[in-house]
Image (cartoon, rainbow, N blue to C red; front, side, top):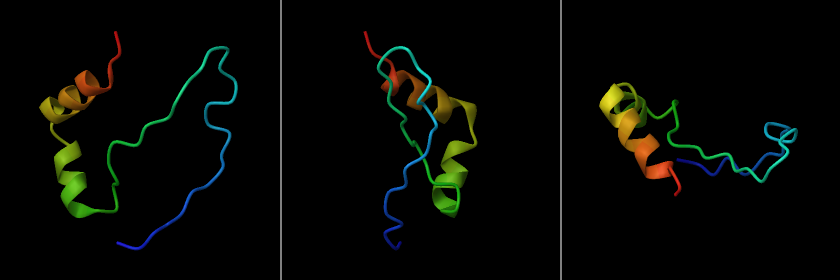
Length: 52
């Protein structure tokens, strides 16, 4: 897969507290698209991203 680089966007600029935007899959990749569909995989990702 080719390097698509980074892009600056105003996605989380209006937050009043520190925030990060995490990409958990790349839909144009057919393998990752299939992984992201089941709710149990989404739950696993959510659990992995949660902070105490």
